[in-house]
Length: 118
Figure 1 (cartoon, rainbow, N blue to C red):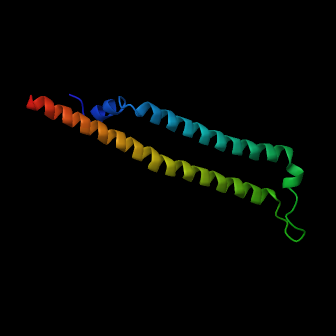
Figure 2 (figure 1 turned 30 degrees about the horizontal axis):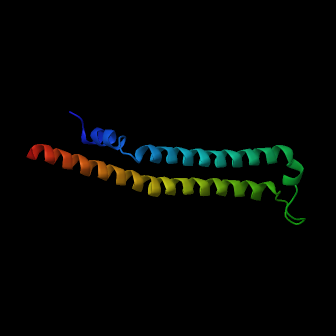
Figure 3 (figure 1 turned 180 degrees about the horizontal axis):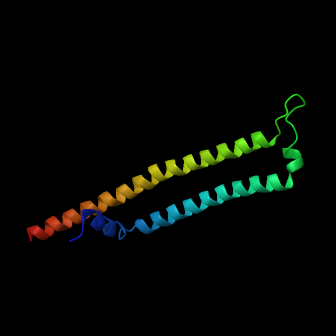
């Protein structure tokens, strides 16, 4: 006998909107991975090809090089992008998945009760 969780998983995978939802989630993950990877590449290439600019002091009285705020910006950007990804996954993705799950369970329960009545 199947557990409720595995039964609900097999029902959801047959939902008409499921394939589109999975494709949308996959596309979103790929885009976020491209943005994150691109920002890492920009940072690394900047450090490799622009060291004379990044190692220049911010001002004459401040010996801190431009690399420090530049790196801080990229660290904050990574946190922001991760937060956006998690928020999207926990709101849009979960809400849509829960809607499909409840529809499938409702239809499954209705078909079981109809089978019992006949």
